[in-house]
Each structure stands twice: as C-alpha cells, then as structure tokens.
Length: 297
Ligand code: AMP
Ligand code: FES
Ligand code: ZN
Image (tube, rainbow, N blue to C red):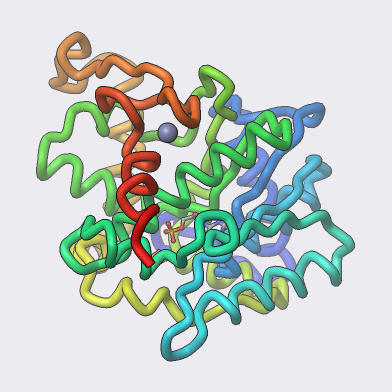
C-alpha cells in the first residue's frame, strides 16, 4: 500500500482491515454495538466484505439484497443473488431479499424504459429505486442504521463529479455518515477510506466468493470515467485520492468550503405517498416514477 508506505502479509492484512474499519466507525460515530444494522449487500466484493467485517467485529448486522432483475446476457442479478444467499447460509446470517419486480410489477430495465429517465441508461432509475427501497425496508423492519459498501474510489469519483459541477447541495451532504431523520435510518459507509484494490485484496485473502462482473449497464458510465481519471492521478502521485477525500471532509468540518450553507440547504418535506423526505413539490421522484409506469403493460 504505497499510500500508507505499508506492506503486510495475508494474515496480518486480514486483521488490519477490520481494525481500521473499527477505527473509522468510532471516528465518525457511525453506530455502536447496541444498534441494529442493515447491510445493503449487492454480491460484490465491497458489500460482502463489509458484512463479513461487521460480524467479525461483533456488530448486530443483517443483510438486505435487492433483486433488480438485470438478467440480460450474463444473468447479473441472478448470479449476484446466488452468491449473496450462499454467503449468508454458510455463515448462518439473516438476509432479507426484496424483489423489485414482485413489488412493483416491473424490473429495473423495464421501469427505466417506460419512465424514460436517464437517457436510455437504467442507472438513474436504478439508483433512485435502490435508495428508496433501502430506506423503506430499513424503516419498516426497524433498523437503526443502513450500511453500504462504498469504498474510497466510489466516494472520490462522486466528490470529483460534484466538485466539477460545484453541486453545493450534494457537497454539503456527502460523507461517511448521513444522519437519520423523519423515520429514516442513519446511513453509513464504513469502507469509505479504503481503496478499491484494498477491498479486492481483502475479499480474496478472506476467500469470499463474490461477483467479478460489473453491472452490464456500468460500461462507459460517467462514474467509471472519473474513476479512471483519478487512477491516473493516483499512479503519478500515490495517496492523491485519499488526500482529496480527507481534505474535503476536513474543509467541510471546519467550515472552509466555499459554500453558502444558507442557499445550499434545500427544504425537505415528507412525500405524501411514501413519507420519505423529498425536495420535490408533491410526490417524491420515486413515487412519481412509479405513478408514470403504473398503467403501462
Ligand atoms: P453501487 O451503487 O452499485 O455502486 O453500490 C454501492 C453500494 O450499494 C454497495 O456497496 C451495496 O452496499 C449497495 N448495493 C448496490 N446494489 C445493491 C443490491 N442489488 N442490493 C443491495 N445493496 C446493493
Ligand atoms: Fe443498477 Fe447497474 S446496478 S443499473
Ligand atoms: Zn414517495
């Protein structure tokens, strides 16, 4: 790990990652051992490793898998579900599975096509549905905290995009913890300081079976472009990605971001249909999208 000037053998690495995760959980006051945690698991290396780590650290963590119905070609959803269920069964863990098509009558690609959100890419509808369903299920099942497997590469790419666009609202909200409100669980990202390759190394050294393929719709996405750009920077200047993210968190904490908090703070109100907080007038974007697709075959 050039950025830390540290080299570890597999045995010590498998201790080091959970120890660091515990440090981050405490540093950012993510949760404690009395709280009920729901880990959103996609079947990928990050979220399965996160679940593994939290259980090893003695936290009360159950899993949630969202079946998105993205099955053209390699059967991405089917295979990621199989691996997630296998992981849970082998470790005797509780996994909730929510099937989007069973609940809303249509898979993600079908919802995207009918609603015409996202210019032909299902990713924007997919993000909207995942966010909404994670919030809804965490609340309905009485979890205190919702944990996702976002790593440093994910977070730095989002930060990069938001900085290029100077999206003040998003810059104010992005971070390792998003406090809960109005019946919404707190959201946390305990892996946000680990490089993607560090998480790959952990999953492999730990012998976790995960889905190697990316979602087939990710190809050519903006987030992959930003990740590649940041990787070039990282190769030339090891540690650049981590510094970019940590200095952002520090600048925001100390009030040194050039952002007018008053104008950037958006007014939220509960959606009259589902109750989740929204800035849209009337129904939230999710409920509007579902309304729009309801009467289509
Ligand atoms: P992504 O949005 O695909 O970059 O994934 C970010 C995080 O969202 C993952 O680390 C998981 O915690 C969660 N996630 C993504 N897809 C799913 C899914 N199908 N079911 C449950 N959680 C998911
Ligand atoms: Fe949602 Fe790819 S995972 S569109
Ligand atoms: Zn709603």
